[in-house]
Length: 206
Image (cartoon, rainbow, N blue to C red; front, side, top):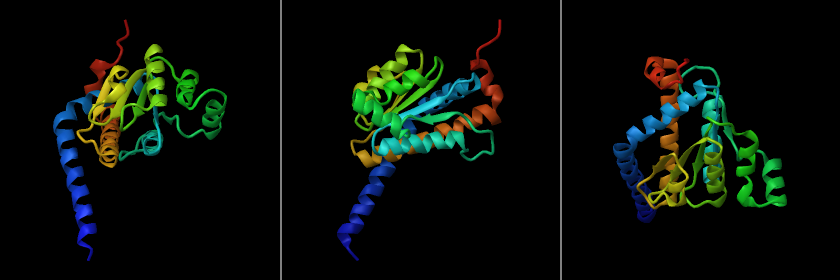
């Protein structure tokens, strides 16, 4: 057996466990707050949009699918949309304008006040994600940033900023998915299992 290979496995596992433990010990209330905001958005007829690059693009599509299909609970489909999936839109915008605008232009077309945009960037500095989040804030769309430990440029454009206590990109991405899964789980909780907990946060008719 390769001791060096085994050590790499265990070192990565330990780093991931430590980051996950530290994240949920310090960010659990934030995760609840974001999931409640998402549930209010969906209950009010809004949608949840996601964007990111590379592995974060895959995570965007993963989380959007959890909403449009289901997570654990058998419930109606919920409107989740990944801005990373339309290759014609991505290549047209990238070709005619700039790769920096591939998400912000889609957001201008598809986003509405009261929607939520979740931007994923392990560095917190992805220009196209930052531009989309800045555009969202200009249009009264709630922004959720998922980043690494510093937050980067996301700090200035996030209504909710989720940082991971690690500088290791794979570990950050693993915690992003763990946090995303918990958001899905809690949105279902608020919308379908504990509606009375959400009611005080919904717009009240005059």
